[in-house]
Length: 167
Image 1 (cartoon, rainbow, N blue to C red):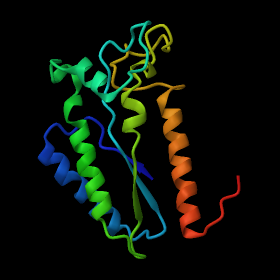
Image 2: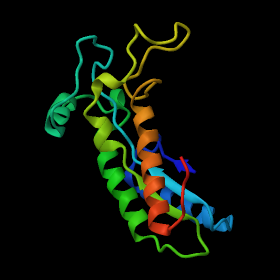
Image 3: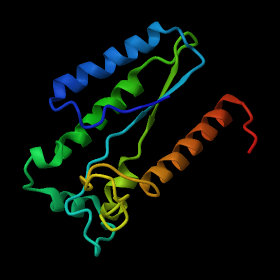
Image 4: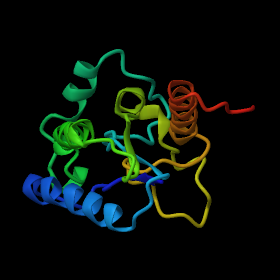
């Protein structure tokens, strides 16, 4: 199972409380053979539908591009990195035992934050779709690479646990 909180929790305390509650609910399902991947949040990009947009060369370049933007217009992009830190710490601190589902972090943030050109611009969107909001992605795009990362992580998990995955 892949889970993500999305851009829906706007206060850090709400986010910090929601993830442990979710894990507690999962543990109550008594499914020790399941694998839960917590996907990191990825912020949007200003002017993502601009046809001349290319990748950023660094995280600092990304940060400079969003400084001064109104919070409401960005779905709280500025807090996503700190939310990811909370999620990573909770996953790391979670005791992995045989009676609980395994939890892992699927960290797509670094590979996505540098790609403002990864959002589908208006020229490529389905004609009936709403205008792009510069937060969500369409296929093909970065989501395809998230799947590659997930499959690589699953393969690594199988190697560590000694389970063979045939391709």
